[in-house]
Structures are given as structure tokens and as C-alpha cells.
Image (cartoon, rainbow, N blue to C red; front, side):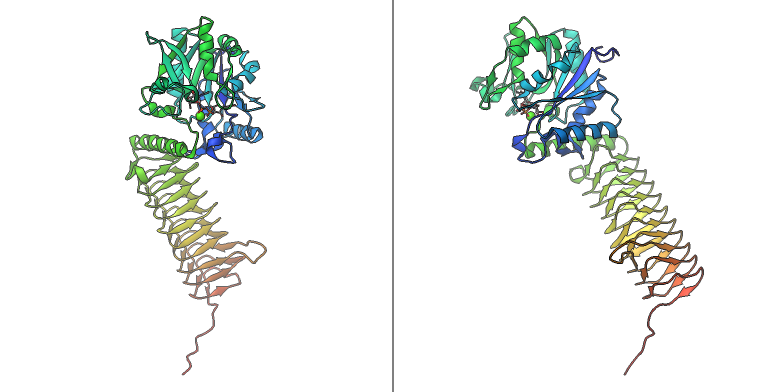
Length: 462
Ligand code: UD1
Ligand code: CA
């Protein structure tokens, strides 16, 4: 197997990512637009890495510094273990030109897999099969193709009388007969580098923008006696490219569907897949139920037997077993076992809640700990607070953590009871087992077991 041989020099992976992405109508480089919560390029990098090539080349051009920076960031965050080399394409003169610029890199290898950075639905399985087909059929190039009911926008595969691949014709230069061909080019190929090098010498500038089409190299390779084969996908969905925002949303839908299917088959109940969005790296344990209108983003990890949703957004958050989060917004926090949040709660970053804690309706928690069994059930703001175990925070209680210049901490000891509508003016400490009368504005520390009353006595005038 090509990819399994350790010796460098066998296989290179090349990713084309220098295009401007004009059709995206965007100031963000196309390959950095997100699908499934990750830049499109991420999915291709992941496949490239999994092929275990000698090195991965990434052709950059438009906004090259940004694409480079993000590529290295992605590679680091998921532990890619292949060397990455950037190739600068000075001017966007087409996919053929991008590969010409990459030749000094490719020449160190015998075989090259070339993929486009804007086809995030490709699967490792298919690209691996492409390399196997290439190896078995011993041609000079092997294309990854698919038959689409609507081939519009793609290069078409022209085959001869015996079914042999002859060339790829781009839509912009295709005849009306060629436009009727349903087999299309995915933009992923496997090449013998030697044949690619000699083939590229012969290709001319074409189309309205006078570009070098990489696809023209097929005809050139054949003209020199080479053979072209194809590995055809059984599922056209995965070859979909993203050139505009409509295609971006189509890709998002496919990735989401894949993700939800994977979760359902691993034991997660998803009540309404059509209204549930889950990013590619989210993990969910068995027997958890996800209710409609739920969005799970980033590095969120949810335990077993939880009930999440309806209408809940959770991002970069770890949630233990048997938790419940309903109609709520939760960011970069931890909810420990058997904790319940919502309906209508806002949990802001760096909150650590539970186990067995309860955050109720219209409550906001920010950068705070709410300990074992503690309750903040109604209409509260808890910010920069450390709340120990078995504390009860009455309705409408506010930690006044900000004096206009700096943030201050509120500490509340175990088993304390804070009455309704209390203002805790931070920095302040409430001792273990202390009680605070409803309506108090607490400006001084409250000792353990003490009762604090900090409000004016009622006067009834007649
Ligand atoms: C390309 C293929 C088409 C195929 C389709 C699959 C060519 C000529 N056509 O068309 O046959 O069906 O992909 O999605 O290749 N790029 C560069 N430098 C450039 C131009 C492009 O690096 O100067 C990169 C882009 O970043 C992109 C890839 O090459 O990742 C393909 O370019 P794009 O303009 O999207 O080609 P398509 O029109 O989609
Ligand atoms: Ca494209």
C-alpha cells in the first residue's frame, strides 16, 4: 500500500487552497469559512494527515498569512503528525498553476494525492480507496468522480467508447453535449508525480479568466501515452464543492446529518434531527435525549442520561451524567452530575456548577462556582462568586461584582441561606450557615451562623 510505506518519498498530499473564492462574496478566504463548526480546510487537512503521507503541502495565495496561521493552529489543536509545507502561489492563475508552483515540493515524492480545500464533505474512506485504485490499476492518474443528477458547476468526465477516461472538460468551455454528462470531477486525484510534471508542461491558458486548469493535465498525460482511471463514489453527496454561500449551507446540512446519524447509532436520542445542529467535535453519552431546537457547538462534551433542550445553545462546555438543560444558553463552563439548568438561564464562561445544583429561570451565572446541591432558582445574577454546598439563594438576589472599575468576589459558605432580593456588594463573604434577611443590601462580611438584616425598618404612616 502506498500510504503504509513509511519511507518518505512515496506519497505526498497536496491541498489547493490559494483561490480567492470570489463567489463567496466575502472578505474571509473561502477555505476558512466554517462548516460543522470548523473551517472547511480542516476536514481536508484531517484526511491528508490520515493518509500518512511523507508530507502535506498546502498551496496558499489569497490572504496567505491568515490561511497559514489558521492551518498551523488547526494542525496543532488536533495533533496532526505530518510535516506541513506551505507553497505560495503568487497569482491566482488557476488550479493548474497552483500545482505547477507545487512541483518543487511534489518532485520529492513518487505519488501525490491532490485535493481541493473547498470540498469538506470528502471522506477518508473514499480518498483511501482512490489511492488503492490508483495503485491496483497502475495508471498515471486516477480521478475521484461521482454521478450527479444535477452536474451543474462541475468539470465533466469524458469517457471513450470502452468507458476509458479521456479527459475532463470544465463547464465554462464544454459543448452542449458535454454539459449533458452526469459524471463529474470531485477535484481529488492521485497522480504519478513524473507524469504530472511532464503533463503540466503542455497545458494552455483557458476559459474567461485565462486560467491554467489542472483538469487539462489528463489529456496531456494521455497524449504522452499515460492512462487515466477513475474511482467513482457510490454517493454523490460527498463530492459537493463549496463555491458560494448556498453551497456552504448545503455542506453544513450534510455534515450535520452525518454527525447526528453517528450520535443516534451510538445511543443518543435526537428527537428532531432537522432542528438540531451539532458541531463535528461534540461528544454525547448514551441515553441522553436531545430535544428540538438544540445547538451544540465547539468542544462540548455531554454525559449519559442527560436531557438537553428544547431550544438550548451549548458551546465548549462539559456536562456530567444525568444533567438537564432546558431553554438555555451555556458557554465554556462545566455542569457536574445531576445538575439542572433553566428554563431560560444564561451560563457564561468559566462557571462550574454542581453536582446536583440547580440554576432556575431568568438566572445568569458568570465565572462562578455553585457547589454541591446549591440552588439559585429564580431571577438572579451570580458573577465572580464562590458558592459552597447546600446554599439557597433567594429569588432576585444579585452579586454586585463591579464597582465601575474592577470586578470583585463574593464568597458564600456552606448551608448559608440568602433571602429574596438581596444585594451582595462585593468583595464580601457570607459565613457557613449564615442567614441574610430578604431585601438586605450586604456591604460587610457576615460571620458563620449569623443572621444579617441590612434594610430599613418598615414604618406605617396613616
Ligand atoms: C474545480 C475543478 C472542477 C471540479 C470542481 C470540484 C478545475 C479547473 N476545476 O472547479 O473540475 O469539478 O473543482 O469541486 O480545477 N485554487 C488555487 N489557485 C487558483 C485557483 C484555485 O489554489 O489559482 C484552488 C481553490 O482554492 C480551490 C481549488 O483550487 O480549493 C478549486 O478551485 P475552484 O475555483 O473552486 O474550482 P471549481 O470551479 O470549483
Ligand atoms: Ca470549488
